[in-house]
Length: 315
Ligand SMILES: Nc1ncnc2c1ncn2[C@@H]1O[C@H](COP(=O)(O)OP(=O)(O)OP(=O)(O)O)[C@@H](O)[C@H]1O
Ligand SMILES: [Mg+2]
Image 1 (spheres, rainbow, N blue to C red):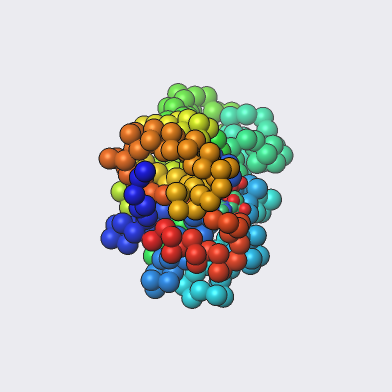
Image 2 (image 1 turned 60 degrees about the vertical axis):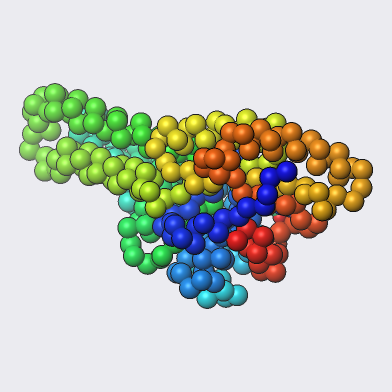
């Protein structure tokens, strides 16, 4: 059996962003909340962000944090927000919508309704969630950002999208240079911002997001469970994050039934099954990036007392 290890190494590494990733229901929000509480208790100004479109942060904290950065009154230094996706789309339109219109309308016969259309395209909300995290990261308002990400599929596509977006912008600028002469003749006389400048500003933004995600002080922690599904998902998420260049600082195995809590045959059977998958995880990840274990608790984790309990177990 693997010895119990936690996340206490984080106290020394002092991450700026700590992203909890993994498949649905494995305990990302629970672990993110407990970790944020830990940093806040140490006196670090901490923001807990959930970018999950179906968030449960308010439920777990037992405080409504939907759409606004909200101080958590039971812990000084702790603030939390669940991104509200209706608001996200609205803010996206305010921040980028008109620019998109300006660029597109410079070479296509489109009106402002194109903004509505693009705001509803897949990936726009995720793109905005990243730029939201970036704004907070670049401001010096918080010492630590604990990021409860959307379940595996979502966050991975979000990161890959960023990579693609970045490459495509380079292409867009080249294409634009090629057709520029013709465009200038078509749009002669109309005062406009140079779309090339707008594209260049998007490119800068995408580069800043990539730098943030690839920063050594940005940690990804993959949360998983000791079952076949968990092992497979971990392999996939691990490979993708690693290929992307993100620093993965730990694999956190949740819902582990430890021998000391096995009192009946049912739990002994489950512990036996888990042992098999824990060994696989151990062989693959114990050396790098290392494993941490969170035992299964008798109750769901809700409210400050339960979050505190998980914090004690993790640190
Ligand atoms: N170690 C544990 N022992 C007992 N219950 C736990 C444990 N970890 C998490 N839970 C409970 O499991 C449920 C799911 O946890 P949580 O919401 O943190 O998962 P998630 O990965 O964030 O899910 P989603 O992908 O839906 O966002 C919650 O009810 C939580 O209280
Ligand atoms: Mg969650």
